[in-house]
Structures are given as C-alpha cells and as structure tokens.
Length: 80
Image (cartoon, rainbow, N blue to C red):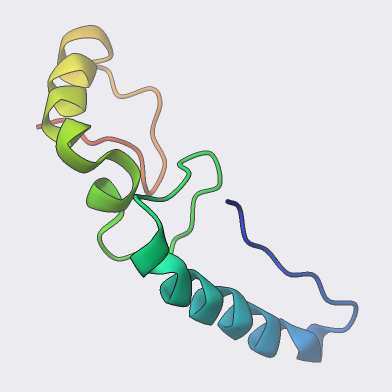
C-alpha cells in the first residue's frame, strides 16, 4: 500500500515525512514487502524490502540483458 502525505506550507514537511516513515515502520509486521513503484529513499534495506529472495536473480538478468545500466536510479537493481 503506498503511503504518502501532503502539506501546503514548507514547515509542514518535517512532520508529514516523519508521520509517513513512522506509519510505514508500524505496518512492517503486517506486510510482506514494499511496493517498488513507489520508491522510498529512507528504506535502508531496499533490496530485501522490494525484491526479497528474487534480488540475486534480478541482478543476473540485468547483467545479461541490460549490461549498459541504462535503467539506473538510487534504488535500481545494480550490476554485479
């Protein structure tokens, strides 16, 4: 489930971001992972959260078919 917050004034950012992170952490015991289409840079162990046991295989596939690493962002599947 994607979790997000909005705010109208800049001073609302800190509290809103903290609320989202606190809620996400509170929901961890009730979930099996994180939805990869809503990346969250605060997730430290994102390979496990997004891909679980499939991460190693996804790295192999990326190395074979996308070796130029065109699809690259902070939480993209890395090359070996």
